[in-house]
Length: 413
Image (cartoon, rainbow, N blue to C red; front, side, top):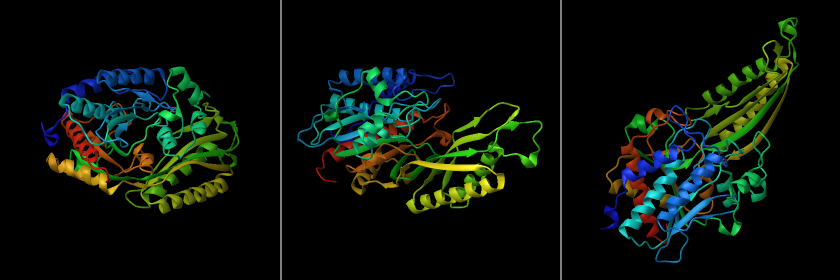
């Protein structure tokens, strides 16, 4: 069988997706499988079992990244395909998991057909892509790329004060830095998590790059007081001030352009009781844009808006910008291989930027990288209703297969 005629086994891929989705399953059909949780441990062992069935030797590094490589004819750094197994709370069954299991299916297809590639081809599961339990996101891929130090990542703590490195030890996945993955090329298949492909009627997207993201924490300090005797005009209500600022944060994006987005995703109110005026509010701000200059301008506008609210509401405001991921354009050669794969398979594709962060953002700093999107029904993700059709998933996985084969035959991209 020629390499260009190879196709993945769709039934096997969907069977594995269903089996993995049972780990951390939620009642409405989604998953909660937080990084380095017991559910994550079970999922990791299942992945290792599947790799072992293919006679591939799984390895894991000091950050818990799991990877395995199918040998090639030449002693070159591998084409790695991957994503992540961790999820958000009550997330979908495809986010991240599809990229890992589609990569596994590519390796299984190559094994069955006894195909030898010039460059090795492998799989990687990155630890803590979501950043839900241990902030920020994509820490382990970032450490491999040199963005973070291993010590800094291992010292991240969740909201209960539990340390990343301690959980890694508890789960038995604290490996060695000498076993870190070393991709020569990198491909990531992922659901789109947005409505663009569905609106265009395209099953697959060629991802030209990832927008910039910056996360901040805003703290507003007012004065707690009794809800009854305190006149409205004398109140220093932290929650009302926060609400006013949140509306302005929304407008910072709306006034900018159609691609700018702003999100307040987490909020904590103190004292959080019915008959007490809130004295302190802490909330998150997530700005995203393709332009680094616009990201910076949005942060400046956030500070200006917070200062105005502080004066108007007689509250104190503090902003801690604790993480920024710069916009990243993917490698033209890798993108050309992906587009060639869609042409070979006669799959109509669309070029687009990703509005969500992915591990490929950091891996692009150390090797030629690219991403493939699969259409999301309703554009939904990070929720239990997340869904991509079996046909679209099969199309995306076959694009991944053919793009990986092309890159494996080209020493230079």
